[in-house]
Image (tube, rainbow, N blue to C red):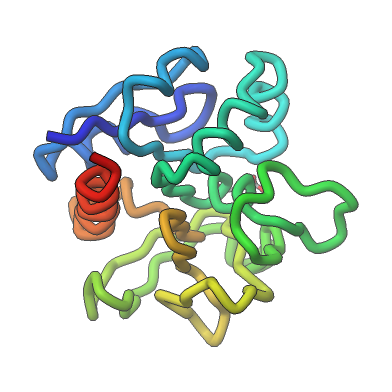
Length: 195
Ligand code: GLN
């Protein structure tokens, strides 16, 4: 059994808890840095990345989250979580955790399309994934270690770099838990290797 944390500072927290639990994994809402010691993988939910960053700093999570990732523990960032993982953000001098070698653009689908749904093919996950986008970012550039898992209108909307996974959309907002299951499998595999 693996135990997955959902960063509990802001955003779609309970939705991720529900989604992860349908895969049979245990979940913990992470509100203090010492809780990171008890989990095998972490979800950083969607919400608002600048607000989440403010709370990360306020509750001293910044170095703890970077250390968690650098130790090889899997992290899955969705929407604002994807922005937090990126090494660079278009138009901003400073990025956040800088754990994934990619550049992202915030609110990238424009105001006319603040939220929408689209059917995506996600490599290794599904050919028909109903994805919910809400003021979503997309990935404008990736380094050579980053695998592109899904695109929408030629924009990169899901990617993986080793033990890091991210999506520009919100997989936790539908009943399709196949991307959550993919992440739980990543966590199981890595936990198996670590032991
Ligand atoms: N646009 C938000 C941001 O920049 C992300 C939106 C979301 O997580 N649904 O943080």
